[in-house]
Length: 364
Image 1 (cartoon, rainbow, N blue to C red):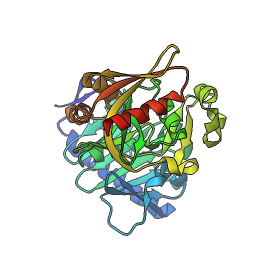
Image 2: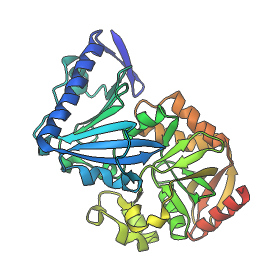
Image 3: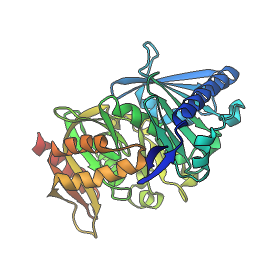
Image 4: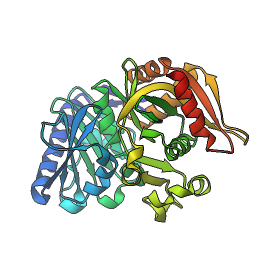
């Protein structure tokens, strides 16, 4: 028997599981090629973290839904890609996902295994709403993303497409995706960390209104360098609808899903409405951890690197499959290289960009 760990539990796979997995994922890739042959091929190229990512869609059903958040990183197709992500859905192409072998299916049926990881493949089976599959073929510089149909794509996947695949790829290219925002200028900025609801998006969007720039609101790329860099990944901002209406109503025209704000977070594609607010990268000068306070003035309070790691690492690692000690090490290396602050969010949000600018002037 072979063991695989997921969610803190260890499950055993039969000894023939690696061979069965290899055959299965070869069949998955062949299914994509069949879907592409039947529906046609549409390609989009993006520059992400210094690498060229090509997304090959079988047909046009998913193109706008899964490339919109990356459009600000578009580039021409003049060079060979570092990674090709092959995307298809069964509804529009008529090509079903191959049935998994028994050695995988018995675990999927009980939802006891949500992925496999080995030398040739790393894969994630997602059960969030309806079944979907992401696979990285490590030696071929290729990946697969399959979903049943376009309507099954939830708002958070449209806001952060191919998140799992890009996480795996980035790790192997000395980058780290983090569940964190960032704001600043070309000379440097702050990384904004914390769990959902802590005030990251409020801080980011308030700063953008005041003329600061951002590489991203919800997920960003870290590069461990001297100094550490934060790089753009998605152009989306997300905020709870009631809070947006109450605190930042001027952003409402940029909300892409106004008809679904009663059940989903409001999603803003910043490159479409505020292209001047986006920036490709900047050095990280400090880490800021927003914290909603009970009224009063906004203020910055120095805190420890340990507190910053505790605010950023858990939410990142929970959302990204197969995260581990290397992910934690990269996050900690960036956090320990710069000063760290708690940002108490008081009544007057316009104080936030004033404090951030002052912090950046001090760091410079």
